[in-house]
Length: 112
Length: 113
Image (cartoon, rainbow over all chains, first blue to last red; front, side, top):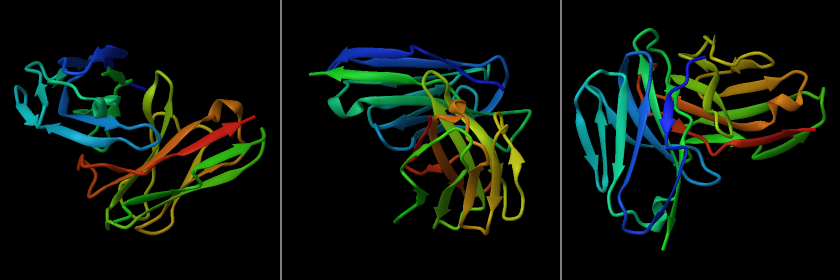
C-alpha cells in the first residue's frame, strides 16, 4: 500500500532551536494533516490543511499544504522539551476519500 | 471524557493462539479504524468501518478479522497469531468517513512469540 515519504527520520536538537520536517507523495492529496505521538500514547491531531498553498499556525507550529498538492511541511519554532515525540504527516488521497495514509514519522529529541 | 478506549494495553501470545482486541468510543462517531504501528513503517490501516454494519479492508488486512458490534464498538481478531503480527495496535474513530479529526486510543502492545 501507499505510504508517504517523511523526512528526516529523526532529529536531535537543542532547546530553543527551530525544527522543519516534510512529507511528500507521488499522488495528489485533498487534505494534509500533522499528528504528534507522545511515548505510550496514540497520535493527537496538531494541524489540518484543506487547500493547496494553505499556511496554518497553531502556537509555535506552522504547517503548509504544498502548491503541487503532493507535499506538506511542518515547522516548530523555539523548541521546548515537551516537543519530544514522533510527528506524523497524514493525507487523504484523491483516489480514496474514505481513509488516511500516514507517513513513516519523524522522531524528535530535544536536549536542554 | 474517555474518548477511545482500547483493551488490553499489553498482551503476549504464543504462535497459533487467537485473541480479540477490543475498542470502544463514547463520542457517537460513525467511523472507526484499526491501525498497526511498526518501527520505521508509520501507521498502516488494517480495517475500517465507515458506519455501523459495514467494514472494509485497509492496506494490511491479511491475518485479521473485524466486527463492528454496534456504533460504539469495533473489535479486531487474530485467529492464529504469527510473530509478524507483533506490533502496537491503535484504534481510532471519527465523526464521519472523511472527517480527519481522528481520535486515537492509547494502543495495545502485542508480542507474538
